Amino acid sequence: MKKFLIGLLSAGMVTASCAGTVFAAGINSAEQRILDQLDAPYTIGSITVSIDQTYRNTAENFFLANDISEAQADTVLAELDIMKEILSRNAQYLVKDGDFYFEGLTDMPKDDQDALFASAQRALKALGFKLAVDDQNISVTDANGKELFSAGEVIKSTGLSETQASSHAWMLYTGIAGVLLLAGGVCLIAKKRAASHS
Amino acid sequence: MNRNPILNIVLSILTPVIFILLGGALFYLGCTWTIGDPLELADTYLLEQRPDFSGRLDDIYGGEGSASGVVSSANTALTDSGTVELSSIQFPSYETIYGQITCARIGLDAPLIFGDSMNALDEGAAQSTASFIPGYGGTILAGGHNNTYFNCLQNITEGDVIRIDTSYGQYAYQVSSVSIHDKNDSDAYPLSRDREQLILYTCYPFDALGTVSNRYFVYADYLSGPRIKAAAQQS
Image (cartoon, rainbow over all chains, first blue to last red; front, side, top):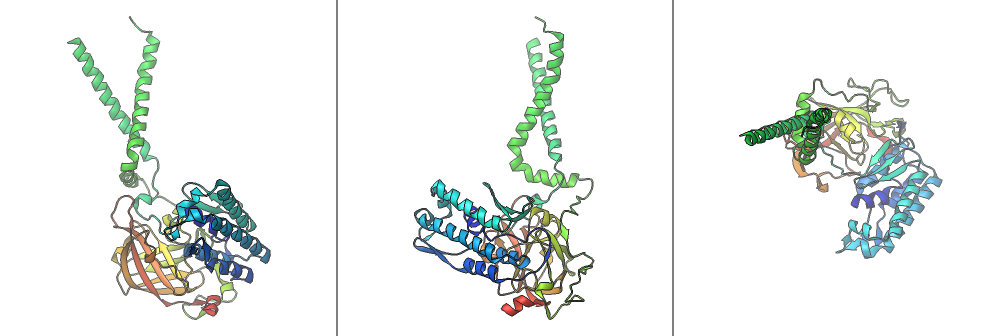
C-alpha cells in the first residue's frame, strides 16, 4: 500500500528516461513548475507530508532527458492537485498517530481509490506513458509496453539467489523426487505382498 | 477375478507416471520456498557454460575504457576536469550502459548501467534512477551482485580510488568509509542533490545463500571529473 500511495502521488511525473537515448535537455520552465510542486509540502489533515526523495529525483532525471511542454505540465499539475484533494478529504483514514498511515489507503472509499488511480493514469498519459499497478509493484511503461520505472525498493536484492541461472534444473530435482517416491512405493507394495503370501 | 489384460497394462504404465508427477509436484510446491536458494546454487554449478546476458541492454558507452563513437559537438575529447555542457551529454535511458566503473587495486571492473532492473544487475553495476549521473552534483547510487561484479568490494578499503569512465567524461571518487546497514535503512543512502558522492552496495554477507536483509555499503567522495555545466550554474 505504501508503494500504491507513492506511485499514485508521483505517477504523474515519475518516470525514468523515456525509451531511446536522447541528449540531455535540461530543466525547462514547465518541468521546473512540476519539480517545484514536488518540493512543496502539502497538508493532509493535521500533518504535513512531502514527496519521497526517491521519486522526486527520478522525476528530475526524467526531465533531464526529456522536454515537456507547458500544456503537458498544466495537465500533470492539475492531476496532482486532484490527487492531493482526494487524499486530503480522506485524512481520517490516512493520518494515524501524527504520521502518514499508508495502509489507510485501502480504507478509503473505493470511488476515491479509483479516482486516485485514474488521475495518475491521466497524468502519465499526458506524457505518453502508462501506469501499471498490481499487488507487488507499481510500474510505468512506454507506449510499447517497455518498463521505464518500477516503484520497488531503492536497494535491490543483490545476492546469489538473485542471479539468473538455468531455470530447468528444477525439473531434474522434481524427477529425482518422483523416482524416489516411486521406489518407496514399489518397496511398500512388495513388502505387503510378501506379508500377504507368508 | 482376473482384470482385463489391457486395463492391467494401462494401469501399469499410468500408475507410476501419475505417482511421479504427483510426488514431484508435492515436492516442488512444498519444498521450493525453503530450499529454493540452495537449488539456485546447484543450478549455477550445473551450468555447462556461463550464462550470456549480453545484448539485453542498450549501450552508449562502447566499452574499451573510452566512449568510442560518442563524441559531442561541444567536446572533442573526454576530460577529467572542467565542465561539460548538459546539452552535449547523451543522457542514458533506462537499462542503458553509459560507462565503466573500475578500481584497479581490487579488480573492480563493471559496466555502469542506468536503471537497476534485474537485467541491469545481471550485467554490471546498476544505478538507481533516484540518483544522478556523475558530474551532476548529486548522489550516484549503484548496486551489484555480491557473487559477480561486486564480489571484490569486500577487499576495498578507505582511500581506494574508484574510477567511472562515462560517455561524456572521466570521474574519480575516493573511498571514505565502508559500513553495513539493513536494506530498508534509508539513512544509509542519502539521495542528495547537493553533494556528489558515489555509493555502491551489495548483499552482505558475501557468501550468504538466499535473500539477506543486510547490505555492504561503500561510500566514496568526488575527486575529479567534469562538472555538468547546467547543474554547476544552478548550484
